[in-house]
Image (cartoon, rainbow, N blue to C red; front, side, top):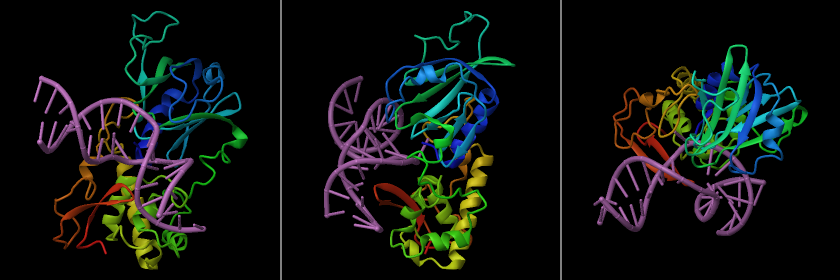
Length: 290
DNA sequence: CGATTAACCTGGAAGC
DNA sequence: TGCTTCCAGGTTAATC
């Protein structure tokens, strides 16, 4: 589901509950998500303390007191929900009791911390998400993380970087921006939005953009990500924050899911079109995105 | 090597 | 109402 702003929003929602908490008990209700869980997954989580919570691209990483890092990718529909205990709950029982859990609640952690107890539940309808446990020293070389490109909100990301990274590529600009080995964290929505803001066609061969255009594109990517982050992400079908509240950046979409609507760019009288590129919907304005 | 396509899953919406 | 088809925010493996 989630792209960088949604994953970062989830991380921020989980941090106050998870960081510093002791995992008293972990319950894993099936053998796999997209991939099998690692061996003895529940047992290796149980008894560990969560030291901190960070994000890399669309991954959430939680270093544990055991010397391992808990790695989470939300896939398309993964989400975390926090349950706080109720007075009626039996001591030692999951607050969100077994047998009463919702469909697709696959992993549940009972946490203890100074402020009391809480349950964190991972729910994933389509099971495109995945989790792993890896020794801290091997996190950066993990197969899922090793090839990732730069963080679009980081210091390395700039127009100059994009110009260099896209040079010589004949792949469509849209596809290049979705390539996580170049820029890590963009997905279909924010690529469409950034290209519209930068007035660049998703069909352009990536290697043909000028230095000036690369600068515009980098600025547009940063701007849309920062605005989405400030809005708590975008809620389409599934996305909710860990506390159950909804992101609202979807109300600010200028291109995504706006087929037939007027382009909002200044001095443009165009209409947003939809086309399919490598199997995914692209929304753009053929009038001003060139 | 590079670039599309199919596949992994489920459920909601739209069409008939 | 019920059945069918299409579509979805991601990533990988297989195929042109």
